[in-house]
Image (tube, rainbow, N blue to C red; front, side, top):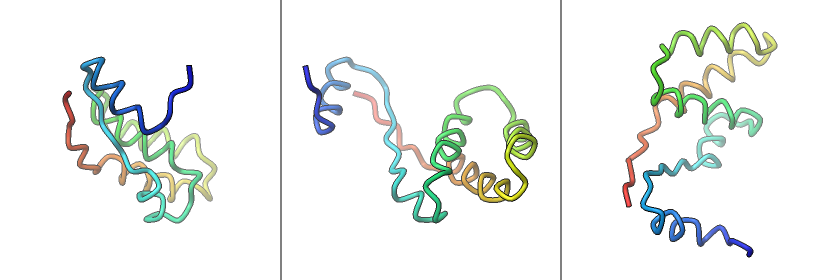
Length: 89
């Protein structure tokens, strides 16, 4: 069975689960580098778990090459500050 992207909302609705939509392409344009999209998602995800924001930032600083740390920290902040506008079906 092939699932089209446009069918995803319908399928999720039928499952009755909570989900959030994040317009990653729009957020990437704020940063100018598509390689940080996972860091944006990490920032958004970090709001749901009980780990302090500072731990994520320290992990980025310690594990990302120094020349990419600033852009990844910015991406994390963008993700962290997304208004997710909860959708419950």
